[in-house]
Length: 540
Image (cartoon, rainbow, N blue to C red; front, side, top):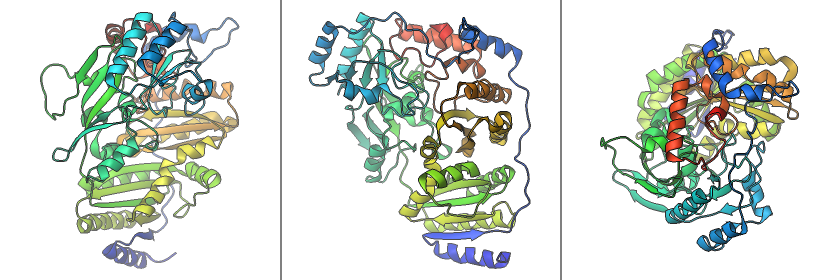
Protein backbone atom coordinates (compact mmCIF):
# COMPACT_ATOMS: atom_id res chain seq x y z
CA UNK A 1 0.00 0.00 0.00
CA UNK A 2 1.34 3.42 -0.86
CA UNK A 3 2.50 5.55 2.04
CA UNK A 4 0.20 8.09 3.60
CA UNK A 5 2.32 11.09 2.53
CA UNK A 6 2.23 9.98 -1.10
CA UNK A 7 -1.53 9.52 -0.93
CA UNK A 8 -2.03 12.93 0.66
CA UNK A 9 0.18 14.52 -1.99
CA UNK A 10 -1.86 12.87 -4.75
CA UNK A 11 -5.07 14.04 -3.15
CA UNK A 12 -3.84 17.63 -2.85
CA UNK A 13 -2.76 17.59 -6.48
CA UNK A 14 -6.07 16.13 -7.58
CA UNK A 15 -8.04 18.78 -5.76
CA UNK A 16 -5.88 21.59 -7.05
CA UNK A 17 -7.25 20.69 -10.47
CA UNK A 18 -10.43 18.98 -9.20
CA UNK A 19 -10.18 16.51 -12.02
CA UNK A 20 -13.28 14.90 -13.42
CA UNK A 21 -12.69 11.64 -11.63
CA UNK A 22 -9.92 11.21 -9.04
CA UNK A 23 -9.34 8.35 -6.61
CA UNK A 24 -7.70 8.11 -3.24
CA UNK A 25 -7.20 5.64 -0.41
CA UNK A 26 -6.07 5.77 3.19
CA UNK A 27 -4.35 3.42 5.58
CA UNK A 28 -6.34 0.38 6.65
CA UNK A 29 -8.46 0.84 9.70
CA UNK A 30 -9.00 -1.55 12.56
CA UNK A 31 -12.28 -3.41 12.23
CA UNK A 32 -14.93 -2.55 14.81
CA UNK A 33 -18.40 -3.91 15.09
CA UNK A 34 -21.28 -1.69 13.93
CA UNK A 35 -22.43 0.79 16.51
CA UNK A 36 -25.77 0.26 18.28
CA UNK A 37 -27.33 -1.27 21.35
CA UNK A 38 -30.15 -3.70 21.51
CA UNK A 39 -33.34 -2.27 22.98
CA UNK A 40 -36.40 -3.73 24.55
CA UNK A 41 -39.27 -4.48 22.20
CA UNK A 42 -42.72 -2.93 21.94
CA UNK A 43 -44.19 -1.92 25.31
CA UNK A 44 -47.23 -3.87 26.48
CA UNK A 45 -49.54 -0.87 26.09
CA UNK A 46 -48.56 -0.42 22.46
CA UNK A 47 -49.01 -4.13 21.84
CA UNK A 48 -52.56 -3.89 23.18
CA UNK A 49 -53.27 -0.95 20.86
CA UNK A 50 -52.07 -2.93 17.87
CA UNK A 51 -54.14 -5.90 18.96
CA UNK A 52 -57.31 -3.81 18.83
CA UNK A 53 -57.03 -3.41 15.06
CA UNK A 54 -55.48 -6.76 14.21
CA UNK A 55 -57.28 -9.19 16.50
CA UNK A 56 -59.61 -10.59 13.87
CA UNK A 57 -56.77 -10.97 11.38
CA UNK A 58 -54.53 -12.78 13.82
CA UNK A 59 -56.83 -15.69 14.55
CA UNK A 60 -58.26 -17.52 11.57
CA UNK A 61 -60.81 -20.29 11.90
CA UNK A 62 -58.07 -22.82 11.24
CA UNK A 63 -55.78 -21.32 13.85
CA UNK A 64 -53.57 -19.61 11.27
CA UNK A 65 -52.22 -16.10 11.80
CA UNK A 66 -52.55 -14.10 8.57
CA UNK A 67 -50.57 -10.89 8.33
CA UNK A 68 -52.26 -7.62 9.34
CA UNK A 69 -51.21 -6.48 5.87
CA UNK A 70 -53.68 -8.91 4.30
CA UNK A 71 -56.45 -7.34 2.25
CA UNK A 72 -59.60 -6.59 4.25
CA UNK A 73 -63.07 -7.64 3.15
CA UNK A 74 -64.60 -5.56 0.38
CA UNK A 75 -66.69 -2.69 1.74
CA UNK A 76 -70.30 -2.26 0.49
CA UNK A 77 -69.50 0.11 -2.35
CA UNK A 78 -71.59 0.08 -5.52
CA UNK A 79 -70.32 -1.70 -8.60
CA UNK A 80 -69.86 0.05 -11.94
CA UNK A 81 -72.86 -0.28 -14.24
CA UNK A 82 -73.46 0.50 -17.90
CA UNK A 83 -75.10 3.75 -16.84
CA UNK A 84 -71.95 4.71 -14.93
CA UNK A 85 -69.79 3.97 -17.97
CA UNK A 86 -72.06 6.14 -20.10
CA UNK A 87 -71.54 9.07 -17.71
CA UNK A 88 -67.77 8.59 -17.64
CA UNK A 89 -67.56 8.40 -21.43
CA UNK A 90 -69.64 11.52 -21.81
CA UNK A 91 -67.53 13.40 -19.26
CA UNK A 92 -64.21 12.13 -20.61
CA UNK A 93 -64.59 11.47 -24.36
CA UNK A 94 -62.04 8.83 -25.36
CA UNK A 95 -60.49 8.85 -21.89
CA UNK A 96 -62.68 6.37 -20.03
CA UNK A 97 -60.74 3.14 -20.54
CA UNK A 98 -62.25 -0.35 -20.16
CA UNK A 99 -59.82 -2.38 -22.30
CA UNK A 100 -58.41 -5.09 -19.95
CA UNK A 101 -55.00 -4.94 -21.65
CA UNK A 102 -54.72 -1.20 -20.98
CA UNK A 103 -55.97 -1.64 -17.42
CA UNK A 104 -53.48 -4.39 -16.58
CA UNK A 105 -50.52 -2.16 -15.67
CA UNK A 106 -52.74 0.15 -13.59
CA UNK A 107 -54.11 -2.76 -11.55
CA UNK A 108 -50.66 -4.01 -10.49
CA UNK A 109 -48.17 -2.18 -8.27
CA UNK A 110 -44.52 -1.64 -9.21
CA UNK A 111 -43.37 -4.56 -7.06
CA UNK A 112 -46.05 -6.82 -8.58
CA UNK A 113 -47.08 -7.69 -5.04
CA UNK A 114 -50.60 -6.18 -5.07
CA UNK A 115 -53.16 -6.72 -7.83
CA UNK A 116 -56.59 -5.11 -8.09
CA UNK A 117 -59.48 -5.91 -10.41
CA UNK A 118 -60.66 -2.48 -11.56
CA UNK A 119 -62.54 -2.46 -14.85
CA UNK A 120 -62.47 1.30 -15.41
CA UNK A 121 -59.56 3.73 -15.85
CA UNK A 122 -60.43 7.43 -16.00
CA UNK A 123 -57.91 9.95 -17.38
CA UNK A 124 -59.08 13.52 -16.71
CA UNK A 125 -57.15 16.52 -18.00
CA UNK A 126 -58.57 19.29 -15.80
CA UNK A 127 -59.55 19.93 -12.21
CA UNK A 128 -63.14 20.45 -13.33
CA UNK A 129 -63.23 16.96 -14.82
CA UNK A 130 -61.88 15.48 -11.58
CA UNK A 131 -64.56 17.41 -9.70
CA UNK A 132 -67.33 16.04 -11.91
CA UNK A 133 -66.05 12.48 -11.55
CA UNK A 134 -65.78 12.59 -7.74
CA UNK A 135 -69.15 14.27 -7.33
CA UNK A 136 -70.72 11.52 -9.41
CA UNK A 137 -68.84 8.68 -7.69
CA UNK A 138 -69.69 10.04 -4.25
CA UNK A 139 -73.38 10.18 -5.17
CA UNK A 140 -73.25 6.64 -6.54
CA UNK A 141 -71.08 5.31 -3.66
CA UNK A 142 -68.40 4.18 -6.10
CA UNK A 143 -64.93 3.74 -4.58
CA UNK A 144 -62.10 5.64 -6.31
CA UNK A 145 -58.39 4.84 -6.45
CA UNK A 146 -56.34 7.98 -7.26
CA UNK A 147 -53.19 7.04 -9.18
CA UNK A 148 -50.11 8.95 -10.24
CA UNK A 149 -47.02 7.23 -11.65
CA UNK A 150 -47.77 3.99 -9.75
CA UNK A 151 -44.27 3.77 -8.29
CA UNK A 152 -45.37 3.26 -4.67
CA UNK A 153 -43.98 0.40 -2.60
CA UNK A 154 -46.73 -0.20 -0.02
CA UNK A 155 -49.72 -1.00 -2.23
CA UNK A 156 -51.25 2.45 -1.91
CA UNK A 157 -51.43 3.30 -5.61
CA UNK A 158 -53.46 0.39 -7.00
CA UNK A 159 -56.99 -0.90 -6.34
CA UNK A 160 -57.59 -3.60 -3.78
CA UNK A 161 -60.85 -4.68 -5.42
CA UNK A 162 -62.78 -3.01 -8.26
CA UNK A 163 -62.28 0.66 -7.35
CA UNK A 164 -62.46 3.12 -10.25
CA UNK A 165 -58.90 4.17 -11.12
CA UNK A 166 -58.55 7.95 -11.43
CA UNK A 167 -55.24 8.64 -13.18
CA UNK A 168 -53.57 12.06 -13.22
CA UNK A 169 -51.28 11.09 -16.13
CA UNK A 170 -52.86 13.60 -18.55
CA UNK A 171 -52.80 16.45 -16.01
CA UNK A 172 -49.21 17.23 -16.92
CA UNK A 173 -49.08 20.96 -17.67
CA UNK A 174 -46.72 23.44 -16.06
CA UNK A 175 -48.89 26.43 -15.18
CA UNK A 176 -46.44 29.13 -14.09
CA UNK A 177 -42.85 29.62 -13.00
CA UNK A 178 -41.57 32.74 -11.24
CA UNK A 179 -37.82 32.96 -11.88
CA UNK A 180 -37.41 35.63 -9.20
CA UNK A 181 -38.95 33.70 -6.32
CA UNK A 182 -38.27 30.23 -7.75
CA UNK A 183 -41.90 29.15 -7.30
CA UNK A 184 -43.26 26.57 -9.74
CA UNK A 185 -46.97 25.87 -10.16
CA UNK A 186 -48.01 22.80 -12.12
CA UNK A 187 -50.65 20.13 -12.48
CA UNK A 188 -50.34 17.02 -10.35
CA UNK A 189 -49.54 14.64 -13.21
CA UNK A 190 -46.22 16.24 -14.15
CA UNK A 191 -43.43 13.67 -14.07
CA UNK A 192 -40.71 14.65 -11.60
CA UNK A 193 -37.89 14.24 -14.12
CA UNK A 194 -39.69 16.44 -16.65
CA UNK A 195 -40.07 19.16 -14.03
CA UNK A 196 -36.37 18.86 -13.22
CA UNK A 197 -35.43 19.26 -16.89
CA UNK A 198 -37.74 22.26 -17.25
CA UNK A 199 -36.23 23.94 -14.19
CA UNK A 200 -32.61 23.20 -15.05
CA UNK A 201 -33.09 25.11 -18.31
CA UNK A 202 -34.13 28.03 -16.11
CA UNK A 203 -31.24 27.75 -13.66
CA UNK A 204 -33.30 26.05 -10.91
CA UNK A 205 -33.84 22.52 -9.60
CA UNK A 206 -36.60 20.59 -7.88
CA UNK A 207 -36.13 20.36 -4.10
CA UNK A 208 -36.55 16.57 -4.22
CA UNK A 209 -34.85 13.85 -6.24
CA UNK A 210 -35.96 10.22 -6.31
CA UNK A 211 -34.81 7.02 -7.95
CA UNK A 212 -38.26 6.78 -9.59
CA UNK A 213 -38.07 10.33 -10.98
CA UNK A 214 -38.56 9.11 -14.56
CA UNK A 215 -42.05 7.76 -13.73
CA UNK A 216 -43.37 9.31 -10.51
CA UNK A 217 -45.75 12.29 -10.56
CA UNK A 218 -45.39 15.37 -8.39
CA UNK A 219 -48.94 14.88 -7.11
CA UNK A 220 -48.07 11.39 -5.97
CA UNK A 221 -44.85 12.67 -4.42
CA UNK A 222 -46.85 15.17 -2.38
CA UNK A 223 -49.61 12.68 -1.53
CA UNK A 224 -47.00 10.31 -0.08
CA UNK A 225 -44.71 13.04 1.29
CA UNK A 226 -41.80 11.49 -0.62
CA UNK A 227 -38.40 12.21 0.87
CA UNK A 228 -35.59 11.22 -1.47
CA UNK A 229 -31.99 12.19 -1.90
CA UNK A 230 -32.11 15.96 -1.31
CA UNK A 231 -34.05 16.10 1.95
CA UNK A 232 -30.85 16.68 3.95
CA UNK A 233 -30.29 19.96 2.11
CA UNK A 234 -33.77 21.23 1.21
CA UNK A 235 -36.06 19.64 3.78
CA UNK A 236 -39.33 17.77 3.33
CA UNK A 237 -42.32 18.60 1.14
CA UNK A 238 -44.10 19.88 4.24
CA UNK A 239 -41.74 22.85 3.95
CA UNK A 240 -41.21 23.27 0.21
CA UNK A 241 -44.83 22.87 -0.93
CA UNK A 242 -46.43 26.31 -0.72
CA UNK A 243 -49.90 25.53 -2.00
CA UNK A 244 -52.21 22.79 -3.24
CA UNK A 245 -55.38 22.49 -5.24
CA UNK A 246 -57.38 19.50 -4.04
CA UNK A 247 -60.70 17.99 -5.08
CA UNK A 248 -62.61 16.60 -2.11
CA UNK A 249 -64.64 13.40 -2.11
CA UNK A 250 -67.90 15.18 -2.88
CA UNK A 251 -66.42 17.10 -5.82
CA UNK A 252 -65.78 20.41 -4.07
CA UNK A 253 -62.56 22.08 -5.17
CA UNK A 254 -60.34 23.33 -2.34
CA UNK A 255 -58.17 26.08 -3.80
CA UNK A 256 -55.19 26.55 -1.50
CA UNK A 257 -52.81 27.02 -4.42
CA UNK A 258 -50.90 29.84 -2.74
CA UNK A 259 -47.52 31.06 -3.93
CA UNK A 260 -46.63 32.86 -0.72
CA UNK A 261 -43.81 31.73 1.52
CA UNK A 262 -45.47 33.30 4.54
CA UNK A 263 -49.20 33.08 5.21
CA UNK A 264 -50.28 32.88 8.84
CA UNK A 265 -54.05 33.19 8.38
CA UNK A 266 -55.84 30.32 10.03
CA UNK A 267 -55.11 26.61 9.74
CA UNK A 268 -52.58 25.47 7.15
CA UNK A 269 -54.98 23.08 5.42
CA UNK A 270 -52.59 21.94 2.71
CA UNK A 271 -50.58 20.06 5.32
CA UNK A 272 -53.50 17.65 5.80
CA UNK A 273 -53.11 16.40 2.24
CA UNK A 274 -49.32 16.08 2.20
CA UNK A 275 -48.73 12.44 3.07
CA UNK A 276 -52.44 11.54 3.13
CA UNK A 277 -51.99 9.02 0.27
CA UNK A 278 -55.10 10.12 -1.60
CA UNK A 279 -57.46 9.24 1.26
CA UNK A 280 -58.64 12.80 2.00
CA UNK A 281 -58.75 14.35 -1.46
CA UNK A 282 -57.26 14.19 -4.95
CA UNK A 283 -54.38 16.63 -5.46
CA UNK A 284 -54.77 18.30 -8.85
CA UNK A 285 -52.16 21.09 -8.73
CA UNK A 286 -49.08 21.99 -6.70
CA UNK A 287 -47.04 25.12 -6.08
CA UNK A 288 -43.54 24.39 -4.83
CA UNK A 289 -40.46 26.39 -3.90
CA UNK A 290 -37.49 25.47 -6.09
CA UNK A 291 -33.87 26.31 -5.22
CA UNK A 292 -31.36 27.78 -7.65
CA UNK A 293 -29.34 25.31 -9.66
CA UNK A 294 -25.91 24.95 -8.03
CA UNK A 295 -22.95 26.05 -10.14
CA UNK A 296 -20.62 23.53 -8.56
CA UNK A 297 -21.50 19.88 -7.85
CA UNK A 298 -19.15 17.19 -6.59
CA UNK A 299 -19.91 13.58 -5.71
CA UNK A 300 -17.66 11.43 -3.57
CA UNK A 301 -17.92 7.66 -3.19
CA UNK A 302 -16.17 6.46 -0.03
CA UNK A 303 -15.55 3.15 1.69
CA UNK A 304 -15.61 2.55 5.46
CA UNK A 305 -14.87 -0.64 7.35
CA UNK A 306 -17.37 -0.13 10.19
CA UNK A 307 -20.66 1.67 10.58
CA UNK A 308 -19.19 3.58 13.49
CA UNK A 309 -16.61 5.03 11.09
CA UNK A 310 -19.40 5.85 8.65
CA UNK A 311 -21.25 7.81 11.34
CA UNK A 312 -18.09 9.65 12.39
CA UNK A 313 -17.51 10.52 8.75
CA UNK A 314 -21.03 11.92 8.65
CA UNK A 315 -20.34 14.06 11.71
CA UNK A 316 -17.13 15.25 10.13
CA UNK A 317 -18.86 16.11 6.85
CA UNK A 318 -21.52 18.17 8.62
CA UNK A 319 -18.86 20.15 10.42
CA UNK A 320 -16.40 20.65 7.56
CA UNK A 321 -18.68 20.80 4.51
CA UNK A 322 -21.45 22.76 6.20
CA UNK A 323 -23.70 24.62 3.81
CA UNK A 324 -22.51 22.78 0.66
CA UNK A 325 -23.40 19.29 1.95
CA UNK A 326 -26.48 18.23 -0.03
CA UNK A 327 -26.62 14.43 0.37
CA UNK A 328 -25.12 11.71 2.54
CA UNK A 329 -26.25 8.23 1.49
CA UNK A 330 -25.02 4.77 2.38
CA UNK A 331 -25.18 1.17 1.21
CA UNK A 332 -23.67 -1.97 2.68
CA UNK A 333 -21.45 -4.62 1.10
CA UNK A 334 -24.46 -6.86 0.42
CA UNK A 335 -25.98 -4.10 -1.72
CA UNK A 336 -22.71 -3.86 -3.64
CA UNK A 337 -22.75 -7.62 -4.19
CA UNK A 338 -26.24 -7.41 -5.70
CA UNK A 339 -25.22 -4.49 -7.94
CA UNK A 340 -22.22 -6.48 -9.17
CA UNK A 341 -24.12 -9.74 -9.61
CA UNK A 342 -27.42 -8.64 -11.13
CA UNK A 343 -26.65 -5.33 -12.86
CA UNK A 344 -22.94 -5.90 -13.64
CA UNK A 345 -22.06 -2.54 -12.09
CA UNK A 346 -18.39 -2.61 -11.07
CA UNK A 347 -17.34 -1.37 -7.65
CA UNK A 348 -15.59 1.97 -8.31
CA UNK A 349 -13.33 1.48 -5.28
CA UNK A 350 -11.86 -1.43 -3.32
CA UNK A 351 -14.14 -3.78 -1.37
CA UNK A 352 -15.36 -2.35 1.94
CA UNK A 353 -18.04 -3.18 4.49
CA UNK A 354 -19.89 0.09 3.91
CA UNK A 355 -20.06 2.67 1.14
CA UNK A 356 -21.00 6.35 1.29
CA UNK A 357 -22.22 8.69 -1.43
CA UNK A 358 -21.62 12.33 -0.50
CA UNK A 359 -22.83 15.17 -2.70
CA UNK A 360 -21.82 18.80 -2.34
CA UNK A 361 -23.47 21.63 -4.21
CA UNK A 362 -22.62 25.29 -4.12
CA UNK A 363 -21.95 28.44 -6.11
CA UNK A 364 -18.13 28.55 -6.21
CA UNK A 365 -16.14 25.58 -7.53
CA UNK A 366 -12.87 26.78 -5.97
CA UNK A 367 -14.43 27.33 -2.55
CA UNK A 368 -16.31 24.01 -2.66
CA UNK A 369 -13.27 22.10 -3.88
CA UNK A 370 -11.15 23.46 -1.05
CA UNK A 371 -13.71 22.50 1.57
CA UNK A 372 -14.08 19.04 0.07
CA UNK A 373 -10.30 18.58 -0.07
CA UNK A 374 -9.93 19.54 3.59
CA UNK A 375 -12.73 17.19 4.61
CA UNK A 376 -11.30 14.24 2.69
CA UNK A 377 -7.80 14.84 4.00
CA UNK A 378 -9.13 14.88 7.58
CA UNK A 379 -11.20 11.74 6.97
CA UNK A 380 -8.09 9.97 5.69
CA UNK A 381 -5.82 11.24 8.42
CA UNK A 382 -8.34 10.04 11.01
CA UNK A 383 -8.50 6.62 9.29
CA UNK A 384 -12.27 6.90 8.94
CA UNK A 385 -12.15 6.19 5.20
CA UNK A 386 -10.24 3.36 3.54
CA UNK A 387 -10.79 4.18 -0.13
CA UNK A 388 -12.72 6.59 -2.32
CA UNK A 389 -13.25 8.30 -5.64
CA UNK A 390 -14.41 11.79 -6.64
CA UNK A 391 -16.47 12.89 -9.66
CA UNK A 392 -17.24 16.37 -10.98
CA UNK A 393 -18.33 15.62 -14.56
CA UNK A 394 -22.03 14.96 -15.11
CA UNK A 395 -21.58 11.50 -16.64
CA UNK A 396 -19.32 10.31 -13.85
CA UNK A 397 -21.52 11.89 -11.19
CA UNK A 398 -24.44 9.89 -12.59
CA UNK A 399 -22.31 6.74 -12.60
CA UNK A 400 -21.51 7.12 -8.91
CA UNK A 401 -25.11 7.98 -8.01
CA UNK A 402 -26.28 4.85 -9.84
CA UNK A 403 -24.52 2.75 -7.20
CA UNK A 404 -27.06 4.06 -4.72
CA UNK A 405 -30.11 4.66 -6.91
CA UNK A 406 -30.13 1.24 -8.60
CA UNK A 407 -30.05 -0.91 -5.47
CA UNK A 408 -33.84 -1.27 -5.64
CA UNK A 409 -33.55 -2.47 -9.23
CA UNK A 410 -30.86 -4.99 -8.26
CA UNK A 411 -33.08 -6.36 -5.51
CA UNK A 412 -35.85 -7.16 -7.99
CA UNK A 413 -33.47 -9.64 -9.64
CA UNK A 414 -32.58 -11.35 -6.36
CA UNK A 415 -36.00 -12.90 -5.70
CA UNK A 416 -39.13 -11.92 -3.83
CA UNK A 417 -38.39 -8.78 -1.81
CA UNK A 418 -39.74 -7.73 1.59
CA UNK A 419 -39.21 -3.98 1.85
CA UNK A 420 -39.12 -1.87 5.00
CA UNK A 421 -38.75 1.89 5.12
CA UNK A 422 -37.73 2.72 8.68
CA UNK A 423 -36.89 5.96 10.44
CA UNK A 424 -34.54 5.59 13.43
CA UNK A 425 -32.15 7.62 15.56
CA UNK A 426 -29.09 7.88 13.31
CA UNK A 427 -26.81 5.99 15.70
CA UNK A 428 -29.16 2.96 15.65
CA UNK A 429 -29.86 2.90 11.92
CA UNK A 430 -27.76 -0.15 10.97
CA UNK A 431 -28.18 -2.21 14.11
CA UNK A 432 -31.59 -3.28 12.84
CA UNK A 433 -29.94 -4.87 9.78
CA UNK A 434 -27.44 -6.71 11.98
CA UNK A 435 -30.13 -7.93 14.35
CA UNK A 436 -32.41 -8.98 11.49
CA UNK A 437 -29.65 -11.10 9.96
CA UNK A 438 -29.08 -12.78 13.30
CA UNK A 439 -32.81 -13.23 13.83
CA UNK A 440 -33.48 -14.79 10.41
CA UNK A 441 -30.31 -16.84 10.04
CA UNK A 442 -30.33 -18.82 6.81
CA UNK A 443 -34.09 -18.42 6.25
CA UNK A 444 -33.48 -15.35 4.06
CA UNK A 445 -31.49 -15.24 0.84
CA UNK A 446 -30.25 -11.67 1.40
CA UNK A 447 -30.65 -9.05 4.13
CA UNK A 448 -29.40 -5.66 3.00
CA UNK A 449 -29.42 -2.11 4.32
CA UNK A 450 -29.07 1.21 2.55
CA UNK A 451 -30.61 4.67 2.83
CA UNK A 452 -30.38 8.28 3.89
CA UNK A 453 -28.02 8.69 6.84
CA UNK A 454 -28.62 12.43 6.84
CA UNK A 455 -32.23 11.98 7.97
CA UNK A 456 -32.04 8.63 9.76
CA UNK A 457 -33.91 6.69 7.07
CA UNK A 458 -33.02 3.02 6.64
CA UNK A 459 -34.24 0.92 3.71
CA UNK A 460 -34.14 -2.64 5.01
CA UNK A 461 -34.70 -5.24 2.30
CA UNK A 462 -34.95 -8.99 2.67
CA UNK A 463 -35.13 -11.42 -0.24
CA UNK A 464 -36.12 -15.03 -0.68
CA UNK A 465 -36.22 -17.21 -3.82
CA UNK A 466 -40.04 -17.09 -3.82
CA UNK A 467 -42.76 -15.54 -1.68
CA UNK A 468 -42.45 -17.25 1.71
CA UNK A 469 -45.22 -16.82 4.33
CA UNK A 470 -43.05 -18.44 7.00
CA UNK A 471 -40.26 -15.95 6.35
CA UNK A 472 -42.74 -13.05 6.47
CA UNK A 473 -44.01 -14.31 9.82
CA UNK A 474 -40.44 -14.24 11.11
CA UNK A 475 -39.86 -10.69 9.84
CA UNK A 476 -43.14 -9.22 11.06
CA UNK A 477 -43.83 -8.05 13.69
CA UNK A 478 -40.15 -8.38 14.73
CA UNK A 479 -39.13 -5.45 12.51
CA UNK A 480 -41.91 -3.23 13.86
CA UNK A 481 -41.32 -4.16 17.49
CA UNK A 482 -37.62 -3.42 17.09
CA UNK A 483 -38.40 -0.05 15.52
CA UNK A 484 -40.92 0.85 18.24
CA UNK A 485 -38.36 -0.03 20.93
CA UNK A 486 -36.14 2.75 19.51
CA UNK A 487 -39.02 5.23 19.21
CA UNK A 488 -38.64 5.08 15.42
CA UNK A 489 -41.20 5.21 12.63
CA UNK A 490 -42.32 2.17 10.63
CA UNK A 491 -42.63 4.37 7.52
CA UNK A 492 -40.11 7.11 6.91
CA UNK A 493 -41.11 8.09 3.37
CA UNK A 494 -43.07 5.34 1.58
CA UNK A 495 -46.34 5.80 3.47
CA UNK A 496 -48.58 3.09 4.94
CA UNK A 497 -50.75 2.17 1.97
CA UNK A 498 -52.39 -1.24 2.08
CA UNK A 499 -49.44 -3.18 3.44
CA UNK A 500 -48.67 -1.21 6.61
CA UNK A 501 -52.01 0.33 7.55
CA UNK A 502 -52.58 -1.94 10.55
CA UNK A 503 -49.09 -1.37 11.94
CA UNK A 504 -49.67 2.35 12.49
CA UNK A 505 -49.96 1.86 16.26
CA UNK A 506 -46.27 1.00 16.44
CA UNK A 507 -45.54 4.63 15.54
CA UNK A 508 -48.59 6.64 16.61
CA UNK A 509 -50.60 6.70 19.85
CA UNK A 510 -54.22 5.58 19.72
CA UNK A 511 -55.49 9.12 20.34
CA UNK A 512 -53.65 10.40 17.27
CA UNK A 513 -54.94 7.54 15.10
CA UNK A 514 -58.51 8.16 16.30
CA UNK A 515 -58.20 11.84 15.38
CA UNK A 516 -57.01 10.82 11.91
CA UNK A 517 -60.15 8.73 11.61
CA UNK A 518 -62.26 11.74 12.58
CA UNK A 519 -60.62 13.87 9.88
CA UNK A 520 -61.20 11.15 7.29
CA UNK A 521 -64.87 10.86 8.30
CA UNK A 522 -65.33 14.63 8.02
CA UNK A 523 -63.72 15.03 4.60
CA UNK A 524 -64.85 11.72 3.09
CA UNK A 525 -67.95 10.51 5.01
CA UNK A 526 -68.66 7.63 2.62
CA UNK A 527 -65.01 6.55 2.56
CA UNK A 528 -64.82 6.38 -1.24
CA UNK A 529 -61.29 7.79 -1.58
CA UNK A 530 -58.56 5.14 -1.69
CA UNK A 531 -60.34 2.75 0.70
CA UNK A 532 -58.45 0.06 2.64
CA UNK A 533 -55.33 2.28 2.76
CA UNK A 534 -53.39 4.27 5.38
CA UNK A 535 -55.80 3.96 8.32
CA UNK A 536 -56.18 0.70 10.28
CA UNK A 537 -59.09 -1.64 9.77
CA UNK A 538 -60.63 -0.88 13.16
CA UNK A 539 -61.44 2.66 11.95
CA UNK A 540 -63.47 1.48 8.93
